[in-house]
Image 1 (cartoon, rainbow, N blue to C red):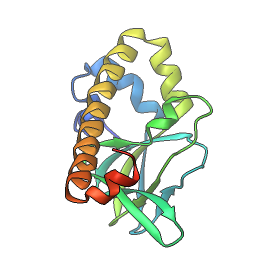
Image 2 (cartoon, one colour):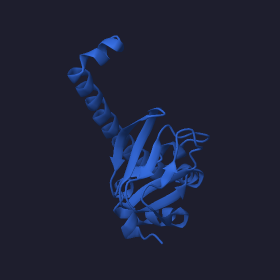
Image 3 (cartoon, rainbow, N blue to C red):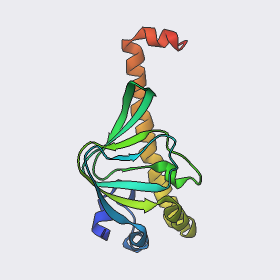
Image 4 (tube, rainbow, N blue to C red):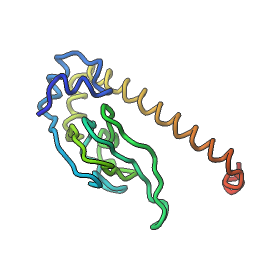
Length: 160
């Protein structure tokens, strides 16, 4: 079972007031997963939103049957499965536990409905979502540019 203190350790929720965290608690389940457990695969319906309490999760993409690339890793306090916040969305990558993990899991539709009902909470959460995803995009852009710089032949293939 999750507590307000647990939720406050999640970056997405760290600045929410206690009364908002109390509204989130009923839809949160604490679940444990083994090493190499696949949380979701690309193309799966995105119906659950995750926040990592303990462990490490890898986000990966399969470019070919024999080529899987790492998109990043999720550390404790961070969230993933953002597509679950959009109705009818599917996942665009794989999420795999790199070690045994404990996660706070929420049904995406219930979390979205809560954010719709409490517009102030929705605004605060989406402000934080925007900042978190902007950071991830900046890191991925920097990684991409570094690869292009070190491997100009890739840039040439892409027409850059």
